[in-house]
Amino acid sequence: MGAVEASGLIAELARATRALGLSQQSVLVAVSGGLDSTALLHGLLEIAGASSLKLSIGHVNHGLRGSESEADEKAVTALAARLGLPAWSRRVDPEGLRQNRSSRERPTLQEAARELRYRALREMAVEAGSQRLATAHTADDQAETVLLRLLRGTGPDGLGGIPERSPDGMVVRPLLRVSRPQIVSYAEERGLRWREDSSNRSVRYARNRLRVDWLPGLAANFNPGLLRAIGNLAEAQRRDSEWIAALVEREAEARFWSEAGWLRVRNEGWDDLPEALARRLARWALRRCGAARDVTRVHIDRMLNFLHTARPGTHIELPSGLRLEREGSDFRLGPIPGRSSGGPGGCPERVLGL
Image (cartoon, rainbow, N blue to C red; front, side):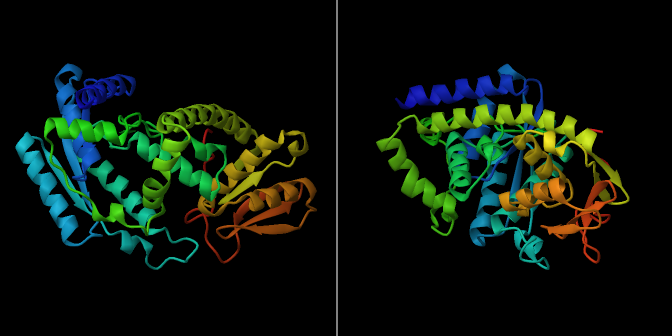
């Protein structure tokens, strides 16, 4: 079985390489030193000749595990030397990103680490002259992400999970259809060496609890093909969300425009919109003005009710220091006086899509 699974990983990696347009590309592979990224790197090396890939390695040291983090960086550097690949490394400070910020605006440690990691990897890709950045997210990561969002509360877009590529096409995830057992089988057959991240065993993180306590039982008792089922759901929902987003953008162009740091909102026609579209437009506006992280269903309901019923001269307050005002025949959304939101000038000066 191991040989079959290992060859299946290579076949899937070759398929994903074609689907993601990686052939004849320079690719920076994000390598932490762990199992998944080590397998991704070696798998891409196996198909590099046939796919005309030019590979390099990028490593991010978050400094969160002390000597373990230092050992990870050294291991990746040594791996690059053995394979004869150019390598770049960056040190980041997730704790520093969380300092001097209010509790509402402060990211979690994992969110801060993710933001800095992608920023550093993109910088390294530019230095390496790489058109693409490959990360080692797997089918297991996809299932964990979708289930965590479902358990915590999410809308339809959240069920789209991890996309196979970033909106700008630079970040690609060619292992999203590959399970961790397949990766283990491949690594063992090829005799690969990797480092184990001790934080993956910590019950402090909800993802680890889900991985250890829930997913195995769900697969054993309800659906042995659970990872594939969740992956198919995520892909289908993501495709639908991309199509719907294009419709929302077109409607937003007709209803919103920027003016002196405010987002102006046309008054007419809100009563005629389908509720689903109205809700997406309200969320779109709040996100454009910097309130994405704090927006809940309650805020969307308050905003839509205000757009339907507000009298001139009235206003409501919304997350992230925003205020929606009825001004004359229209509305405007922007920062509460004395506070900042959505950047130095409040809401952005350009509406996406215009």
